Image 1 (cartoon, helix red, strand yellow):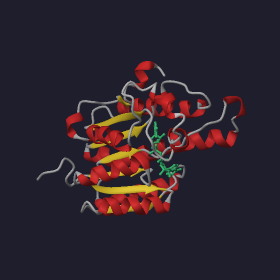
Image 2 (cartoon, rainbow, N blue to C red):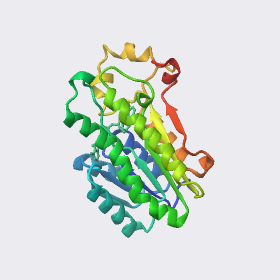
Image 3 (spheres, rainbow, N blue to C red):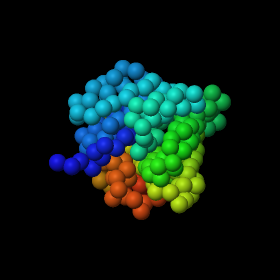
Image 4 (cartoon, protein in one colour):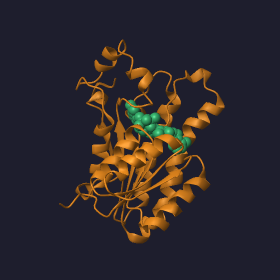
Length: 253
Ligand SMILES: NC(=O)c1ccc[n+]([C@@H]2O[C@H](COP(=O)([O-])OP(=O)(O)OC[C@H]3O[C@@H](n4cnc5c(N)ncnc54)[C@H](O)[C@@H]3O)[C@@H](O)[C@H]2O)c1
């Protein structure tokens, strides 16, 4: 049977766990060859195993998205192995739980460098090859917290708001090309990033109350949206941010 991404090549950053892993495995299940990267070696190996179980090819690379050199090596390695990158998912990300007045410079840099600079480095490195082929899909994982502020999350809010606007800016700069640039903004999803908060049974009712669908998201919920935006069914969607949050943003929290 023909699969949606047969023969395509998808590069997923932050693929060692959570949403990135779920997206990589779903792409593989739908026929795509994968380039997966992360700075968590053991998690990445597990993802590679899950991807290869689907019978596709997988290039796995240790990359810190804050390093321009490592990002460019990863993209060049991917192009050498597969010849093309059809889909880029800028998923690697980090959180922040420090009140604004106590925020140290190093923490500011860490959050902004991973969540914004990493997306800049990867998108810039991949785009020339997409433009040469006049084909490509870029999906940035932002957050509803890029549009609504949360306590102790001011710089995370800033970084995800910036990633949302970068999505729109790249979309405009790709005018005239068959390249789609979009974002997926998750709400609350149970992953390593949120385990402390959402894994606490006592706090769960408080969060569920804010979500009209009354359930915490799963990484697969976000992966479904990523694959939709990467598919040719979404070819007229451009510069958009798709909220995948069980309706949470409707309540403005
Ligand atoms: N979980 C949620 O509720 C939620 C909500 C909104 C947005 N998001 C976003 O979804 C994305 C994925 O997060 P997740 O929830 O799956 O968390 P996660 O912690 O499970 O996954 C994030 C991955 O990014 C990797 N990573 C972090 N910094 C890196 C770096 N410098 N270089 C390379 N890899 C790096 C981590 O090792 C990890 O594997 C993030 O961008 C996050 O901000 C998550």
